[in-house]
Amino acid sequence: MTTNDTILEINNISVCFDGFYALTDVRTKVKRNTIHFFIGPNGAGKTTLLDIICAKTKPTAGTVIYYPKGKDPVRLTGMKEYKIVNEGVGRKFQVPSVFVNLSVEENMILALKDHKGILDSIFRKPSKEEMQDIHNTLKRVSLEEKAGERAGSLAHGEKQWLEIAMQLVSKPEIIMLDEPAAGMGKPETFKTGEILKDIKKDCTIIVIEHDMDFVKQAADIVTVLHEGQFLVEGNVNDVLANETVQAVYLGRGGE
Ligand SMILES: Nc1ncnc2c1ncn2[C@@H]1O[C@H](COP(=O)(O)OP(=O)(O)OP(=O)(O)O)[C@@H](O)[C@H]1O
Ligand SMILES: [Mg+2]
Image (cartoon, rainbow, N blue to C red; front, side, top):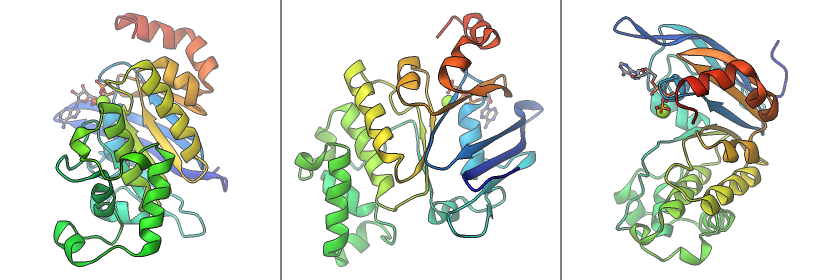
């Protein structure tokens, strides 16, 4: 049953690449305003699942249904990728993709929903409200002091936070982050967790991550994938205590 607090329903998703099943019959529900982690060893199919949700990849079978607040459900599978962003589902890829030669603030301006790119931002000045919103968002990721700095001069962690902030300016209902803490040290990872916990008041966050301390810190719910299949789901302590989950991780060198 889909209750009112379900924002995303993943129904029996299978993906076959040239005879190889990257995902087999995966199903789960994501609840509104939660931080929902997908974990699992390398090659489990986590990134492929995000690719399905944002329609970058077409599933062989199954559907993904999105329940925007106060609107009719939207079937994401089969939609065009760019349309899904307009529906309020954002995606941050593993590799940072900020414009290094632009300032932090200029990167945020480019991320505005109705902005059509560099030319548009030269000819159309953002409104006062938009600039206010940009600065409030930068504050949430502790980058307000760096608004005028070149994005290329930011530390690795700060670039990741800028990208998260760039997603937030378009007021998405869901954001998806693929290993946001990769390459970060402990303090930056912890800070990322705190940032996400603040952001979830306004949107639902789907995260892929390998760092178990980070998962423990921030997860409301954890889904474990293994070799393309749904293994278990639950709160972080139950999932990590699960014998099958432990065996799966140990079998792959215990991440
Ligand atoms: N376009 C593709 N064509 C063929 N095989 C693919 C394609 N995309 C992914 N795969 C395969 O599907 C499997 C799942 O890959 P995926 O990237 O989803 O794993 P993952 O859980 O994100 O792993 P990691 O933790 O290493 O990022 C892997 O075996 C991968 O090689
Ligand atoms: Mg991956």
